[in-house]
Image (cartoon, rainbow, N blue to C red; front, side):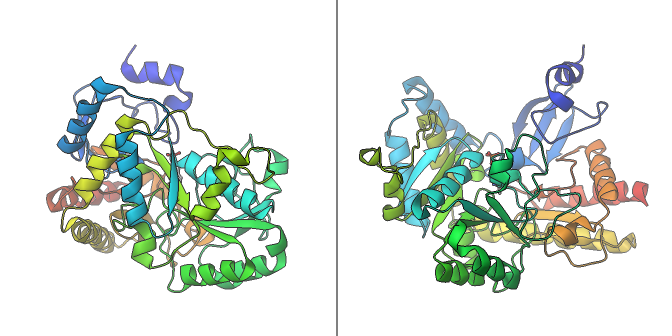
Length: 423
Ligand SMILES: Cc1ncc(COP(=O)(O)O)c(C=O)c1O
């Protein structure tokens, strides 16, 4: 059996989730370096997934490897505070305006789940308002109304996938992203039962329209509802201080993951000391006490990797370069599409880009869905065949610190070639 046959036999659809490659394209990765990876047959790929954005620092970045290698012989987990987790927490508190205190966990899914639970525990109210099409990890709120085929009227949720308890789906309300008036209305109608509003400040690859995040901040404050920023993607990527810094809006609670760990498993969530006090164990027995204990959260390997990654991010010019590179890639995509006379929207911000085959501006889930998804998938598979490693669902491409102009030129050449096939 080949590596990919073995993968098809033990993993549903041959992967650990979401890649959904046809069997003839499925590969098994052997190693990565910078923005490249190699499969088990020695074939080289330019990586535009970068571990779904978790390896913003670049594969096998020497500083991260050195930090992990130094810690490994000294123990990998104590489920307790270590020098590494303490230093990292202090740095996050320094850079994240919303965070006076935080706790670590092991993934973005957990970080957003804890924020939702904190909002419920804080307010005593049951419901979370999310935006249609947003992903907050594989928890109930995270996947509800993620890809509704036939979306119900707002604010009704669509469980989208199996495995979500109906009682949980009933505790989720859904609003259209970038529609402040609709969000305000839902808040006005349901404030008495809403614990928190969770938003990806940059939803998937769709930027917030001017005034949307500020408006949400004001509306949640007026309604006495906590605002949660899911910064799992935007954190450390749009700016060192994440979306809070980039868009200048400070939420009540914030969730981090992905880029923070330098490619190692991590999640973190934080807020004011008053809200975070709900987790103090002496409150056990009080109805507002919130149980949080993550066995691997804040382990010294992940936090050592994160400390090294943050040091790399802090180097002067990092974010100017990431933004220039992202803009270069998006502009190049628009040029190639124009030259091929193909109608499409190129969306994204910072080191993120996505092509949506639509003649209409993309501002939320429903306008994204109007795009030609089959064409999007055909293009992604065409790029994959041409040695570009990406998620063929037609979602965003991730750049990293290890990408440069030459790599962007190369992907644009292959994009042009792939477009010639899909007409
Ligand atoms: C915005 C956002 N939040 C949360 C998550 C979940 O993170 P993880 O896969 O680490 O659980 C993701 C993952 O893609 C994400 O994009």
